Every structure is written in C-alpha cells, then in structure tokens.
Length: 333
Image 1 (cartoon, rainbow, N blue to C red):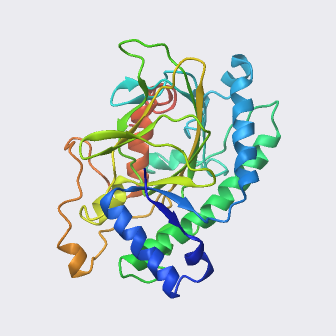
Image 2 (image 1 turned 90 degrees about the vertical axis):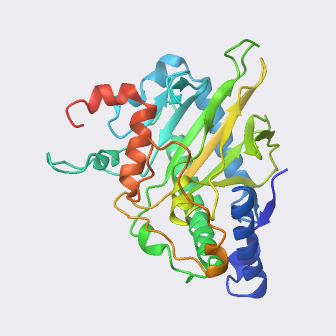
Image 3 (image 1 turned 180 degrees about the vertical axis):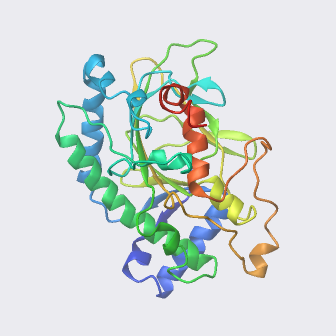
C-alpha cells in the first residue's frame, strides 16, 4: 500500500503548522518511495469521473475514426496511438492511447531553432465527440492548479521559498496528458507487458484510473501491485527531480501489467513539467538532506538526463514514437 498524503491542509494554509507538516510528509515520502496517493486535492470527483467516462467512450469508437487522429499526423506528438505502436525499452507496449498537450498554434521554425520547439502545436480531437475537448481542457486546468501547489509544498519541504519553482513554470508549463487503455491479454510468454519497466522522465506525474489494477511499483527490487484509492490520485516523481537533488528525491521504477482477458484498465496520466525552455538546475539542499544524497543519475549511462526540459522530453517522445520521427523529423535531426 502506498502512503496517502492529504494536501487539503496545505491548500488551506501553506504556512500554518498543518500545512508545514504536509511539506515534511511530502519530502519523507518522496525520499523513501517516490510514489504516493494524493487526497484532499479539491478536484470534484464527478469531474474526474466524467473524464473517465468519456475516455472509455473514445476507445469504443470505430477504429477507423480513432485512426483519423493518429499521432503520426502530428509533428507535435499529439493524437491516437494504436495497440503496440508505442515502445518502452525497445519493446512494444500493449495499450492504445491518445496524447494531449497545451492547446496552442504551431510555431514557424527556422533551420537553427531547437528541435524541441516542434512540440508546440495543436491537439487532435475525435470528430464525433466534440465534448471531449472541453472536458479534457477543463480537467487539465484544474490539475495544473493542484500540481503547482504540490511543487510549492515540495519547495518549502526542501527549505526553499514558496515560489521557488514558479519561474521554471511561468508563463506556461509544458503539461501533458496521456489517456490509455490497457486491454486484457490471454496468458502467454509475451503477454504481460502493458507498459514496460521505466522511470518517468520529468518532474511530477499524476494518475487517475478506473478500478482495474495493473500498475506495479518497484521497491527493494520487488514489484508491488497498486490498488487504486477512490478519490485520490497516484503521484510519482520523475528523473529530473532525482537529478536536481543528486538522488535525495527518488524517481521510482514502475510498470503496468496487462489485465486478464475480459477486463480493461483505463488510465489518465497528467505530467506536470516546466516550460520547454526552462533549465532545471541543481537544487541546493540543506546540509541534513545533502548528506543523504547519493547521486542522481539513473543506471543507464547512455541515456542522459538533460537539465533543459525541452531536450529531455523530445528525446523521450522520439524514442517512443519512431513513426512520428520517420514522418516529420528525418530532415531535422
């Protein structure tokens, strides 16, 4: 069972004793496990349930209509990915999904502009579900408010000012969202990978899901199933926090195991990260924390963690979607 952290006291009074106690609990949990449930976030459950309902409806659309918004159409890595077309550690993940980001116009780019600027652009939406755009953007806006407060709580827990991380987010963070379906698979030698074992690449990930389990978190070398807690988000830290704190905070490995036949897991992952051009510098730690920092790099020396967020995320997106790279990036690398 993951720890449950109630953020309501911090939202009500971040500088009061209960708000400060939340900051301490957040640091302790981020230090020990890197995964926790977040309750008390004040996002109405009916809003999240509506998103889950519409997400399920999207995956029931005819495949032909889902393919109309295929991610390969978008140089911004927005849109639908069919089963098996995204990869983790070089292996196909058994899920289909729709990727969504900040809704904005594409930028006309010059030859010497950084490649990660191609990530800016519009989303693709299913033609028969016009309501989905409103539901998704409204939920993402609510999540951004909660995520910003969690950043501020983490800053205060690290002995920093309440606004310590604000400059890396302003004027607009590069928040992303991935709505995924993990259908059941029959037993077999290659049937277990819904999503391969990995660490998230950014800062914070928030997960909303239905009642079907599948997420597994690694601790002490063992994988543990995570049973959802109604009304709470699953939250984990990414590699950029681990690198910036020299390993004091943890980016924990996790995976998703396919459910049995006849079931499907619906998962909505919200990734709260800096703006694309933000440099996430090392965070000076209090001496009692610095003495516990044992190194922030992961165990794959060939996969560096970049401090410039745009370089970090474009690396991940290109590795996960070689079809988009082939369609839009061959002349830009």
